[in-house]
Image (tube, rainbow, N blue to C red; front, side):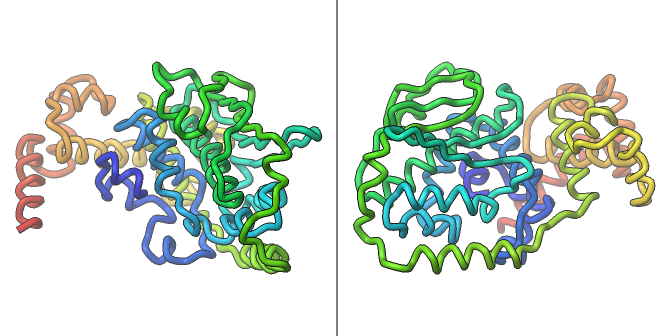
Length: 333
């Protein structure tokens, strides 16, 4: 969320998402759903290229940001042992249902892969993959206490117009785009040198702590909130359909309809709610014309949008925009 703020996204754009409440963010045992992280990444890539998001995420990830997972790497007898532990306890920092970490060793080389099944054209997923590889390199360098240069970097992402920022992030321009998987490769000898500040027995303590964290973890899975996150993401890509949102949630359209009925709501009601919230944000946060907002929100024209705003708020889009900005000015006094 720090990165979202850095690129200019206001908190009300993501504060409603599951797992972003202060009581969840301040509790190390709470596991924020991957849908929330993906949604925030999607909002971020609206304001900045995915390459910038990768770099900003890495810059905001000082040691300790990711809790015990960080120290598993930096406190092990060697960086290689540390990254093995990090892969074994990857679930302490990510949802293993959507992301994975894999170590491959062939004697002379060590390849660290970040596994994610999202399409390579999905910018938010590309940004997360790019960040993950940069994070692995940073933590290994912090463990070794020296600058590490990888032999090769592969990214399951479309090639950006420029990748200077990524070259700086990885310490090399040897980057392969549109690869089958995202990975970063080092010489085994570089990762096998003793960690300068390793303490005997500390790795075992940290592994036990990681196991306790996983056993005590509190997954935040509110079905309605996850559905609304998926619906909002689909809405950003065009007019959402029941089947497209069901695919995002890896369930059938029939199951989705049944779950909505069980929650006391309907598809049409939920779509209208997302539209209303989106239109409110666009009126409040942008200077887009009513015609442009109507087109972005799935309405045939500005008249249809005005009728909807009148039905929801009893006023016009222009008056709603003025009222929102007047309230913002008053709040800042």
